[in-house]
Length: 239
Length: 391
Image (cartoon, rainbow over all chains, first blue to last red; front, side, top):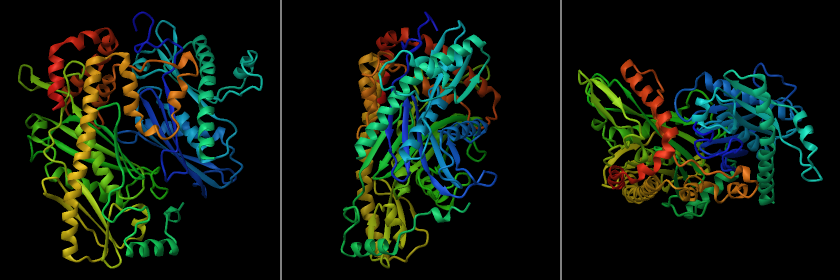
């Protein structure tokens, strides 16, 4: 990158334009189409269905994830995405509400321009909310890249992911909305709420990693505001 | 875990209601017997990516191409392969993994209609006879099963093939066998040659073959006695007919259906052509301008589906300055990367390296792409090519 600026003229902390459409599909119980720039993922949720698969704990609900790439055979990369998503979603859903059931989440990649896994996590979280699956909190995901000069950029696209020294996909719980708005002391509380998932590619120093997390937390509050607004609009639209 | 109980079965009342209404020439959604549902065709950012909505049925088509060795008995023809995915998101009864019989049937009907009727010109896909030809792969993803998947998937395949652009390649080198695949930023990619558009039209039969309707919804499909799919084109040629079992129908009824099908095919062909043309001209305009003012246009193309439901996109622009950002003007960069990625093992090592080099180079050129953009707009060669592309 020349001049420290990103290819599309974004500054390092700028996210791509988001959009989320609620329930674009008619047969699915809940669905969401989440777009971050050129990366678009369509998530559909069916459930809870009776019975669990062999090997799953029947005392809890189980989540089944199917990842469909845009083209090509299903390989290891898709299986890895499915496992990551399954574990992330299992940690945010209330599994004891409907024991011995399976909720299936199906993802279809419509466009891929970097930060595909965070986009998919956001889409599936929104789809679960639209389907009415009980959850503890939402999962908000963001991709961060560490460039060669040590700069940390948010919401990487494909070109940036390839050029970066390393990049990480981080998933945070959504930020709480305080009753008194814009309280600056909330910041410490948020960073203590922790990290749900983190997948890194490439080697990064500890400082870079903590830097990424810090930026990620800040971005997650923006994304959770957006998600909250979208969900509220969808709910008020139905009613 | 048995999935049979998940397949939607109509209740006795529903079945009775649908059949009785049809006897009085009424359909459950208020259509006439031979009316298609509302058709909406949209395109994605990349070339060769289409989404079709026919009523409640939603299908996505995606075309990619790769250089491979041709079949031995056809050394100077490219290949066209159609892969259909009945995604589990479309219907709770669809299971991931092995395709069921309806998925295979759908794939075969579309394949016959497109490939065997020679709708797409295969000989123009030959690069070096006997060694390198383009293999075009069409992936059809069924996203929402609202009934009549064959017709919707066919339209998605045609729309995607019409907007697909394959990279230009030249043969050269010492032995005249070296193939260089050009990056889309360097040389404009070429469209496929499509001779005619075979349109699939599906009829459903009820009540011992007396009652015929067009474009059944999934409830009507569950209740129908038999179905027939006729693939015809606007010239009046019958490309394929599929009637697999079901109730017996009189031949006079079949002839009537074929006549109706050719009328409908002309109508749908014009709709597809209109959508493809408006997309192509919009893309050409964007390429010439490359100014931030093109951004509002771009949002309307990709997010047409989002307009009726919540448009959070317009909302978010007022939330925070941080989030407002120009969408990248270099949209084409994604397509070059996708096309160059090998999906299956390519047998020819030479070709692999040249296309990999092209992909590697493309990244660098894309980064330098933005300062180059104004120069590109002024280049007369590009403008002339744009105009010829439009026609």
